[in-house]
Image 1: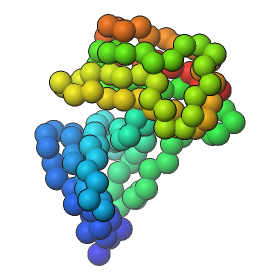
Image 2: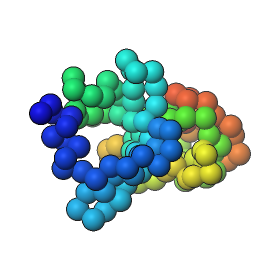
Image 3: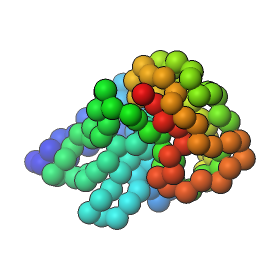
Length: 139
């Protein structure tokens, strides 16, 4: 049995729609969005984007930013900015929601991956954004 099959046995994953999955672990339900071409997939979960590939070659995703590097929160898919919850210079904690997007009639919170300071905010409420558009920069 491959690593991906063993991982799938530990979770209860069900497909909701194309690229949208519901994952239940220990009684907690989470929504995971998966997108991109087969050879370069990425996942959006809990306000963070995890680059691929997904499958036998890689069963765990790791954020690509280093802790001491400038970090950027980007739109994972075409969306509308519903709320911007921070300003430049704000000190944020790991997991804090910074921006809320709306896509496919669902709200997508973008959260800080670590304790940081907001270096720049590149969006406003009502903006239409495309995938990989940098919305907030953190240092």
